[in-house]
Length: 257
Image (cartoon, rainbow, N blue to C red; front, side, top):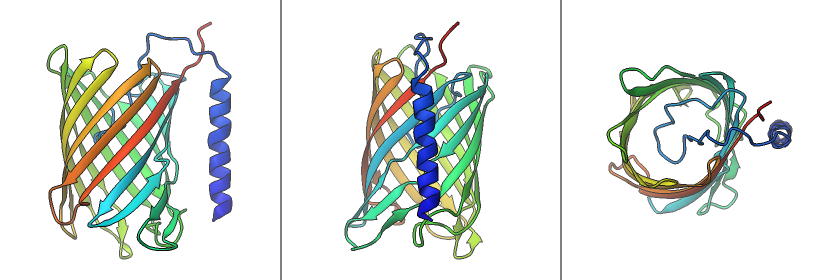
């Protein structure tokens, strides 16, 4: 299994190296990330753009802390409103259990931007995960998912948004259909800096609901680079007690002729 991880990480490094060889023109394009909200971005990466989003998360599972990183999603602008997506396997480490560590599953996806529609930006994201992870961290199944994120400007500084999503994770040898609903309000504090509050809930066919209240902020250190920080509190017993995370994202663009 480690050979798969090495090949995948090698491919990521090659992609980053190739993108860095391009000059960063198109300075008027501003990075728009899926991070750090539960709701994904409602717009696609620009044509020819390579966007790499990364992070680290520390989760309190009812008193037992776990880390996962790099939370990397690689997004490539294939067409004007269509992007390809690679979800790099996360590395999980349970700090309370010796030896409880390993890589999760990888996934591939595609995103189609549907908006603007009546003042709303809307996209559809379909992905499929593959059982490439280590025992105890892989679902051992092929798990599809569909996300429909949206946003709408309310004023110069306020934006509303959210996401409806549908997942089919493998649990106990069969898919456990899970619906998700999320809603957020975002406030632009300064031109490069914004903050949000978000409600998100997962509602599985089997098992308790996982609901949370989520807070986060993002700062664009350049038009193509972003730092983020976020934290959440669980609202139901099946949800994690809380988590805190940080991240860094970069958009690499093809140079203009």
